[in-house]
Amino acid sequence: AQSVTQLGSHVSVSEGALVLLRCNYSSSVPPYLFWYVQYPNQGLQLLLKYTSAATLVKGINGFEAEFKKSETSFHLTKPSAHMSDAAEYFCAVSVMGFKTIFGAGTRLFVKA
Amino acid sequence: DADVTQTPRNRITKTGKRIMLECSQTKGHDRMYWYRQDPGLGLRLIYYSFDVKDINKGEISDGYSVSRQAQAKFSLSLESAIPNQTALYFCATSDTTGEGDNEQFFGPGTRLTVL
Image (tube, rainbow over all chains, first blue to last red; front, side, top):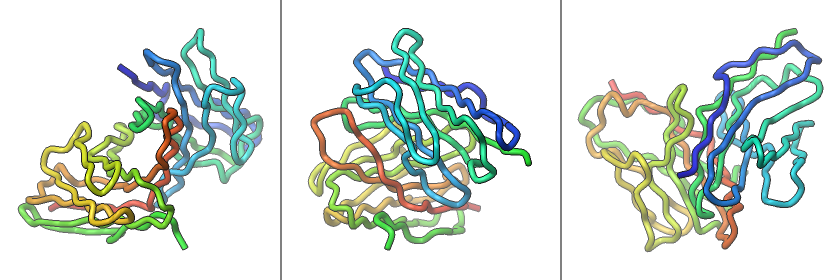
């Protein structure tokens, strides 16, 4: 069965520092993987997605993620955090093309 | 204008009351979903619909029902609300695809409190 594990429910970084949010997945078939972001009082919006093309995926707002099959990982990174990046981030895997399994989420705090 | 809208945005109700949450979309997508979000649990699927005639239970459908009135409208009902249904509820849509690219488009959410 497909599943997603996000390591760390809370991550705190200083403004300008590297952002690294970890996601590991379990899938019996080649996965489609997603990162979504949720800003306060808003719905989720797509940051980026992996659909079996390039393993390094670039998304909006300077975020990127690398698909590593050998490690079953899809970690999200951004070289330099900005205050506006403070939000909750969800990793997700698509199952059978129509269902999405979400991780528990990681809340990112950015300190000035 | 927002592509996926939800009404109401906030609702406080009492135990035992019937409540309906509504979702409308202008994206023209066939697939619609209802999720609930609880702290530390991420999003969990309640129901999903592939078209007006196709409705399916998700992982936590007990205590909920849905109605797909049209391609653009998908409503979630709590027949007799209970306090542990207090949560943030999201409607989402996705386009039909034979591949696994199930990118979802979310509404702004409805915060429901059951007293």
